Length: 205
Image (cartoon, rainbow, N blue to C red; front, side, top):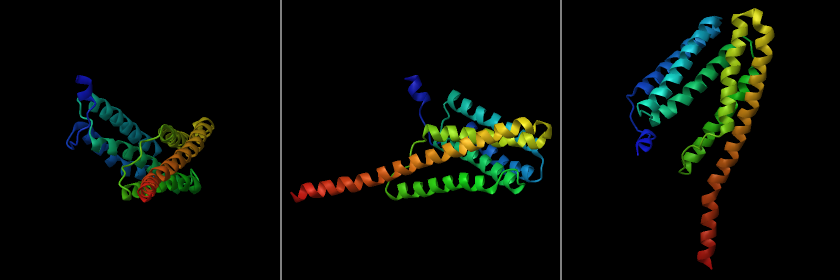
């Protein structure tokens, strides 16, 4: 009984984990500004602070039974915004090519469109696929690794191949998961139409 209560998701807004998530969101523009002006060391420090708050909000949410719907939205949103900020900042400085930015952001735009399609048909968002989680993990670590090479040029020989391996693998998995979401959206959206057609055929007979 106690474990069931701990797993309940509430609609509360004013919780400690949500406060930490809001702090993470406020750090995103600071992170972006530091990257653009070339303060990679400070930008990495902001990212470390964000990662610590991310760990703490999850631990506190579970420990104090403060898991909320808002928190479930804010947490992945903060991760994606940090990735987006890193992409924008590094692309502006030409550390990464703009095509990588387009590839990654293009997939997120597609998911937004799929979400709108699902909402118009009365469905909520699709559950997160494990490939999407792995892709986000790869990208979340790829960009900071590349930033380490910018902050410490002597380490470029090591950070560059590792960072690019994570980035390219992450981008590939990102789109692989995106295609799965696309196919699942098409399947879910067409189910009512098929059922309705079958029902009308039955009634006609």
